[in-house]
Image 1 (tube, rainbow, N blue to C red):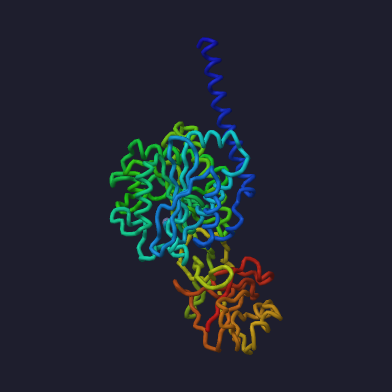
Image 2 (image 1 turned 90 degrees about the vertical axis):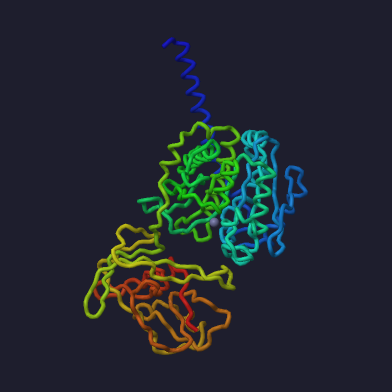
Length: 489
Ligand SMILES: [Zn+2]
């Protein structure tokens, strides 16, 4: 090779590497400075249309943004499109068509704050001169009001892309068509029990380039989405290593993602799953912020085009092999024989009028040989015997009486139920690891799928752990890692 050709080649490689390093630097800074963009008025997963309207209204006074009311939900709530940027490539992002999937909505308001800040001028200039960005946050505000998946008609908006009966679905289609968007982002939440295939890591973020036909063909439109996801994955892996999954790509003819891909918009589905010790999904919100901005930046500078398609197909598929708590090999006595069983335990949210908006109810999801499964929390319980929990024999007069003395002494003696005479009417869960009964009644104990898991674990003749309402409680520090117990009225 001639020297000057080689030098030129080296120079090109160096510039390429430099660009990648520069981009990496940008993402690291984004990740590190995230808190300065975080929209502080939203702190938890459950928030309503009323809470985002002031944020949207405030943008109307800023010339940088164009805000348009593009539709109305069944119950009359506004659907708003927030647009900015001067470029010719239209990027359209919508969130929360399922009312109880709010993670990306939070991230959208963080990203809007980012674009209002004075930081990262060069990167923003590149994005805003090449792109016009359109956000439609909270497409299903009636569902969000109740924190339910479906809309006020009771249908799944994501199965309404063809029949278009819901005003929410009609709005999404009309906006997509009017923009003829080049790129679309369909922003959802998935089950927290998904893991990256054959690993114990949760699929904290899963991506999909939806198929547009049963054959799962790859045309230029879908190929752009596939390459873009490859790029997003390469970035996100640095902040959530191993916690990225690839969503099932079976064609669903009624779904929006599949149809929007078919209508010519390169479509990326982002699903927010679970992250250890992040029940309100604030860490996942941050990952949404980074991954969405990485996509926007890569579309603007076309860096995603360089990523081979294989990167996407190498992302591990989503599997559903996680439990909230997995106990391995507990010793369980049934009809005078002892059996070794693994227990897979999950806790489900029950909506309630309390500060969190919900309480948790535990259940045994599976039992037997669960050696192919994982838990957010795991305990090797092979040296432990299951001991049923008892009711404390003396009724208490009030919840205050229970709180006054703490619960350690009750638990040490094997009591995990107390009878309390006066339970406040508005109290719907116990904040200490003891179930509260309105009256004395016999407890039928058995381990079976669906049962509320409440029992002690005994080792060498001593009670060491309590499993109550699905939470594992170390008797030495009973408040640690505990959510709530139940009230049986
Ligand atoms: Zn969804």
